[in-house]
Amino acid sequence: MVDISAHALDGSARVPGPAYAALDLGTNNCRLLVGTPAGDGFRVVDSFSRIVRLGEGLHNSGRLSQDAMERAMAALHGCAARLARRPVYAVRAIATEACRRAANGGEFLARVRRETGLSIDVISSREEAELALESCSPLLRKGGRRALLFDIGGGSTELAWVRLIGHGRPELIGYVSLPVGVVTLAERFASHGDDDTGFAAMRDDVSDRLRPFESVHCIGHEIQQGGVHFLGTSGTVTTLAGIAMDLPRYSRPAVDGAVLSQADAAVALQRLRALGRAGLAEHPCIGAERADFVLPGCAIFAAIHMQWPAPEIVVADRGLREGMLLRMIRSERTRAHRPPRPGRAAPTRTVA
Image (cartoon, rainbow, N blue to C red):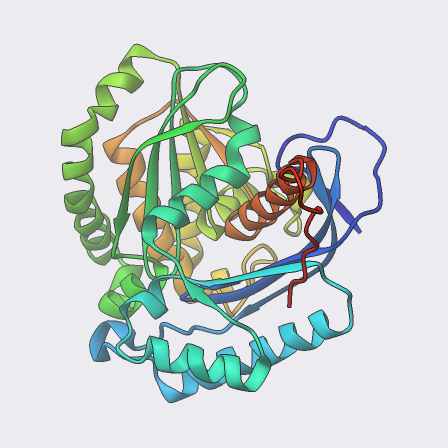
């Protein structure tokens, strides 16, 4: 079992408690995380992750393909089986960009509910940014005035502009969801993204989409003044960290919370680009399933870092699932400590 604190566990005794489950059905991955409360965070007791490529072909057709839905269904049946074997107090299941955009997204999720019993909500891009911020907030408790958090996904890229208020919870003051992710860029540019011209075209496409957000919030000026944290959470950023640290194989404890200098990130990006498709597939921190998506992710990262050249990047291997677990645990603790109204017994709660 792995201890994960999304609020920096400080060694306090772990108290056994009910299990909570969070499921994230994304454009590229299906992920499940089950945890029990521990200190200010939680202890992971089960996890599952599979690349399903649900958004494959969506950019061109506007619909989820039959093959993509079958891959996702197989993974979701696996998640449902795991949950059936373990008593779980509460479950939150969400879907993101692929199901937001697909004309048949609602129809697919209705099928998921019929066949697996899983009720999956399509969340807004704002909630996606909020959940990422929820999970990453402990990494921002190092002083500073502002933070820019970015999450490079399969079908979209979320950016959150954050005000840091002492030791309180970070405050979201602006966000944007760009309709580009590693899957959409991989499909649009195909093998052309492997060469210098194609990579530049991907990067410039994303750069054009970032400028309106910069014009509203003047983030570049804030970075020049200092006190701005630059935090990335995605497979792209964690892969860059693994390359920069010369890890023989990927290690979450080594990567989560690591700080990369601007120079180290640039060198890692160049090393990834130099590997070529075959080298990416063979690399122990990447693998064949993710090889097609690494360079599109690097192009998105390059565009973000070119627009906002922060001196350091904080790396987070955490995201929507961790944010959901923390919200559920905090909500239940709040409910448990709320006194019943006069004349009424405290309610009991049953969660399917």
